[in-house]
Length: 114
Image (cartoon, rainbow, N blue to C red; front, side, top):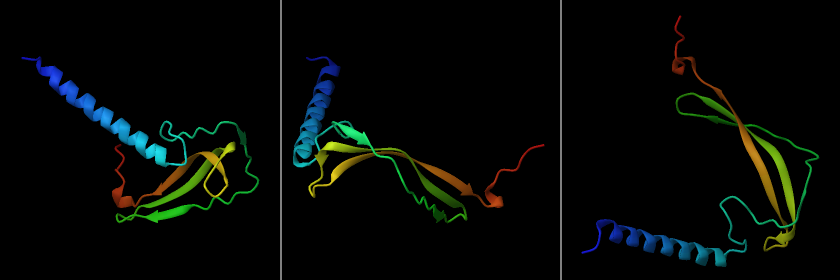
């Protein structure tokens, strides 16, 4: 008789190996080399400065009456010197965030004590 934990860990290891094989198979089909999620192996790259920007905000009106105003915030842009997409354009890596402002109806706000 085997210890109770042995079979469970063997099954988990087998499933993990299958997931890894599947990821590798899918990555082999991709034109971008596999890497950690969200990171491109840019190799040599150069920072590209933004010379002109129009950061229009996007306004979402929610079903409860709240309005969300969302604007992009670009932190840094790098252009690869060695990697290109299938149409020959260089790959860009963009570090960005968002600024979100809310306009909440009074009926949804918590009343202040005091």
